[in-house]
Image 1: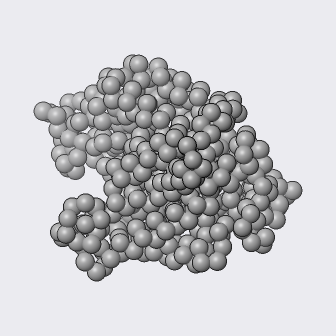
Image 2: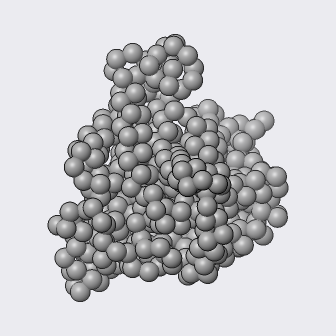
Length: 435
């Protein structure tokens, strides 16, 4: 293979990895197709053996071992699932997405990161422009972009899910702009403004929550690490305090959920009983309280390894219809990722996932010792994803997992080649005052 062909393969892999997440605006299948092309080009490019070696070494790091343990602890619930094929398929997709993210990380750490970031900024900007034109100028513009032809579409409804993706994408694009500098920085700032307009226009509460939480937490982490407050201990202490407060809030909510429905009040698959809410409906709507109550009670039936991945709405009683809401007890998923994980993977699977996430945050903080801006952006993406997941989609949605995993992998590509737990070097093109 000629040198030119090798260069084109690597260039194409970096570009497709960069445009994958922004193309969620065109459809979830388009994103998965772009990532599939990136994977094929990475595997076709020279250095496959070294890339495989990097991934295997990464699997032996604390984070890698925690991820492997998490997947293993999810298997007993999968084996006992009432929908074995569904659970096994979701488990396999998750393994595949993590594998692709690992390959992207190690591939970009060898080179091509800046190309990937340029492609991401361009794609994000173009997608935001088309979305805005579809919303405010002519909806067929967006209909054509979605492959529906030049027809009128409800652009706001079609783009609602994209609001959550933007909450994760905007911090990554802004970080890429800082790293590349000059015109790329201005393009990233414009994209941030467009992302906020889009989130508000499509009425994405999950996206707005994710974006606000991302920038607040990311800014605090940046300040703590940039000025090494409390000798560098301020950032981890802040995140630990935040986690404790969230755990207390979750426990408080669980103790105030409404009681499970009385069996005698369910006739012909419809619940006719009174609606009793333990939480103010101004804080959490009544239907969501019953979704959480049903999910928590069902989780306690199999507390160790859960009912199986992605089966919550297939459990006995989940399809019972509320007469007052005209909705089932679990319409599609529990609408809370901690409850969904606990219900479907049990306490062991949930604890293993939390340990893996804690190690990922630890990795970002170690990177922040020398690259606080990169660490802040990584934490911002982390916070945007997990906070938005409290309100939007099933945690097992492949495209949604891909948003988080691929963006995290791209940012981790700024870490040095080799063991991802090593400290990162300062971003080459980031102005010194932002490092």
